[in-house]
Amino acid sequence: MRVRSVHSKNKVRKSKETSLYKEQRVGVFVDVQNLYYSAKYIYGAKVNFDAVLKEAVKGRKLIRAIAYVIRTEELKEAAFFEALKKIGYEIRAKDLQVFYGGAKKGDWDIGIAMDSIELAPKLDTIVLVSGDGDFVPLVKHLKYALGCRVEVIAFGKSASSKLIAEADDFVDLDENPKRFLIKWKKQK
Image 1 (cartoon, rainbow, N blue to C red):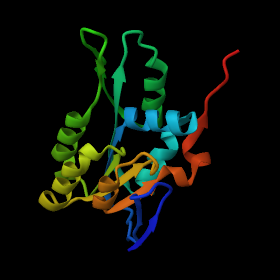
Image 2: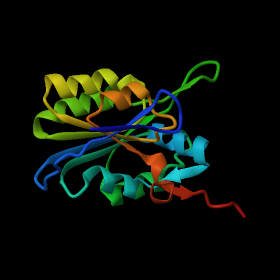
Image 3: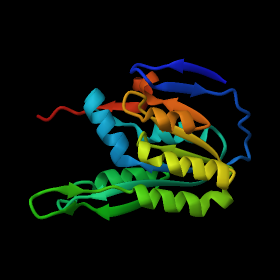
């Protein structure tokens, strides 16, 4: 295994020389909010989810690719959700919760965990597309209790170093922004 530092301290990028074989069954679980906000705040750009899916699959046998999204009241995201479907993602959507006083909540951590655990017996490799450190216990469970290889794809600048360390492999989207990002279109 080769390990090297990335841009921020205490982060590790793992790159293993692994044998990826064509019949390896892969499930891809994408925390869309995590990637969206990382790309927006680090680069002022959008994520190229097509390129992310191709990187996750790497020519192996895709069993499921699920994108977990949050719907707002305005439903502005309909075209984006449709684009994700055309790329090959199955969409799991939930409404943004707005609490008294204006606080908002919308995450899929439990849903991603449940789906990946349920699908694990049908998969050889689980690709978690998120940098959220809350997934460290999930990664450990998938690897040690369920016997899956777990790969993580995220922006290294905003990803949890513990999540990166626990993964069998980590793909840092920061290393190829031209491939994984789409610039915002300027409003006229």
